[in-house]
Image 1 (cartoon, rainbow, N blue to C red):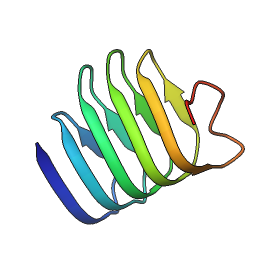
Image 2 (image 1 turned 60 degrees about the horizontal axis):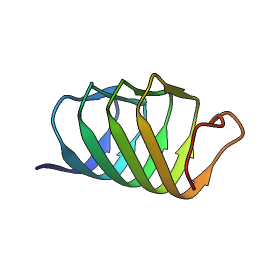
Image 3 (image 1 turned 120 degrees about the vertical axis):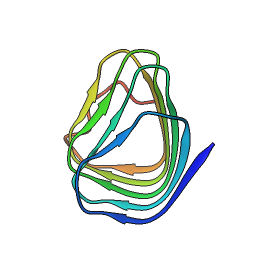
Image 4 (image 1 turned 45 degrees about the horizontal axis):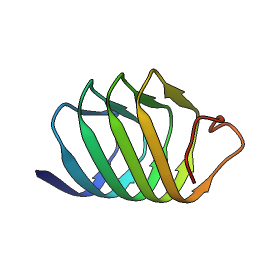
Length: 87
């Protein structure tokens, strides 16, 4: 599993399973079938493609576009996050 530690200032595209530790300042796209465990802060738009999985330990600040994936949040989301989230 790939690992990222730090701050991503551009929109990050996850095309392989990964642990992301830090801040995604400009959003995140998770490709079909990919699993991402994010420990930190997710800002900007989040796109979760079909059969993708996002688990967040931290904070989501931004809109979530769930296109058929699985989203689990152990933390906080802002008002634009949507309703397809498992707490």
